[in-house]
Image: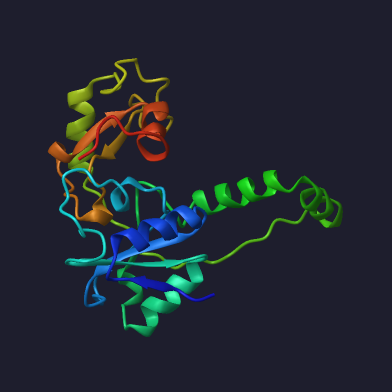
Length: 213
């Protein structure tokens, strides 16, 4: 599968997204920076929301986009352009390398029940597996502790009490979320975080966020 570079036209870029909603998009600098290559889903707000951005901001200025129908094509493109493997990162909001690739496959399966039932009949029930090499950010325990102390036992979005206590340390179960993801250059600071219950945290990542950066 071949990756497609968009470096001249935002209109062409958005037309490609509309035609290929189940693809993957990499955001990188115009010179295909060897140290910045972030992969997103095409629905991700970080690569689609125009807001107050100037015309051409997505592909015609400092940043360009690389699109492909599978992750392997994007990784291959990055490798060809000498992007360091540990510099290929995945958006923490849309998580293209974790759950959403499965979400896309589920969506395809729902559209073709005949093919789905054929695959089920052929399956022996053994789960497949893969080995993933990825870079992870080491988060500050002090930032998390400070934010949890500020929040007390209540979600800072809906205001409801934490649903239960953690077995590991007895603390109220709230998830500390970065408003601007670390993979997008967000800082690991108290000011860039918010403590959320599981439902509100899922909304920030998979729905319309109430607490954008």
